[in-house]
Amino acid sequence: MKPNIVIIMADQLAPHFTGTYGHKVAKTPHMDALAARGMRFDAAYCNSPLCAPSRFSFMSGQLVSRIRAYDNASEFPASTPTFAHYLKLLGYHTCLSGKMHFVGPDQKHGFEDRVTTDIYPADFAWTPDWENPDERIDEFYHNMDPVKESGQGIATFQTDYDDEVGYEARRWMIERGRDQAAGDARPFALVASFMHPHDPYVAKPEFWDLYEDADIDLPHLPFDYDNADPLSKRILDGIEADKVPVDDADIIRSRRAYYANTTYFDSKVGEIIKTLEDMNALDNTIIIVTADHGDMLGERGLWYKMNFFEHSARVPMIFAGPGIAQGQAPNACSLVDLLPTLLDIAGGDSTMLAEDVDGRSLMPLARGERDDVDEAIGEYCGEMASSPIIMIRRGDYKYIHCDIDPPQLYNITSDPHEITNLVSDPDHAAIAAGFAEEINTKWDCKALHEDVVNTQRTRRIVNQAMVSDGPDAWDYNPPSDASQKYVRNHMHWTTAAARYRYPPYPDTK
Image (cartoon, rainbow, N blue to C red; front, top):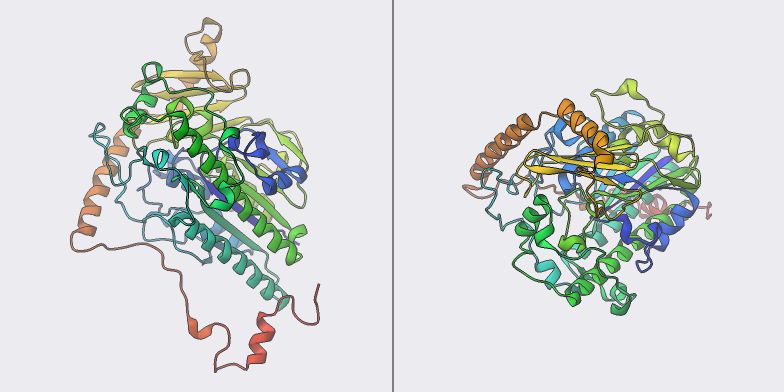
């Protein structure tokens, strides 16, 4: 019997800021419990430290440059196969509840069901402009307001959204339980994708009150504009951190809210697991918890993402369920590895792939077996970059390349805070040269830059036309037919009662 699959995705969650990965303040009991009985991946990365590109790579198993998923307004083509398509072909009933930041008229991308709208717009409005890199696009560029205005509140647009996402995910799973009780033998695959702990850093009081200011840690590396690398300076300028100073109180308040929102996300993980337990489905469900990217949270004076330092580029990745060993996997891996992993879980293999993918199955590692691959690749072509940025994490080392910036080389094992750039160290000259040659061979950064700029131009024109006479929205509206819900005149109420009761009478387990 094929296992059910439940993927629970956070937004902007750096593993460094979870109890699961050793943080001494952040409380994540449900993720901790999953890791205690499953496999924790200790070097998992996003493939682009920005929401939409990361998610498109996650869905397709392909790198940003292969599918032209450059930024938060890049279209995700309907012709690109996703793991949702493949799982459906393998007999799964699939569903998306929550955010995936799909851009374009296709808002399902293979999911049989989608039970919520998205939280962000689906058009081309958020297109960056590399031809005018010094201009801020105030409509969607980050600034320092989330830091200066951080704190607590009884509700935000994000808590409204995540409460809906969690409710609809649990409701959909129970409906699948009803279907299975009625004879539908299909396993289900659900992606529940939440917004937290993404900024704004505003937390509900019940989660805020779990923390005290005195316990909140300050960044390991402080703001130091003069000694920052060129990309960091561009980001600091872009988010206006160079103009809007923050003090320790701002940082502590923001971090406290972020930790509280991480615990809030963790509570959603717990609610989904509790539903699986109530359905007696937990033992036949593989659960994967991950995120689209991390958050610098004040490290180096940087906030949010958009770079390949560890707090921005790393993601949590936890597997638990049937066939999953207990332990920690040290190998570098990334979100593109999840498509072949899901095919492996579902009984498929590479022969059914319609397009080449850039990942490998992580199931050998999840089973506690040896994996000779120890690599993650990242590409960033979004706002504030001005030129493509390539990251290779292999073994102990991370190499970062950008045509307009000096290269960076770090030993992540001995220097986890990436303090010492080894690229000019004579003892590491051969390693740096090898990475540089690899990037020169595998990437044509000048051609990639030209394509990014060209797509930005065309998308801006299309967006101008779309909004010229009122917006032409691609935003997803979940279907709802009240005439078919609950008890209606075309059915006997006892029929509805029997359908909705779960588990069905007389099975009361």
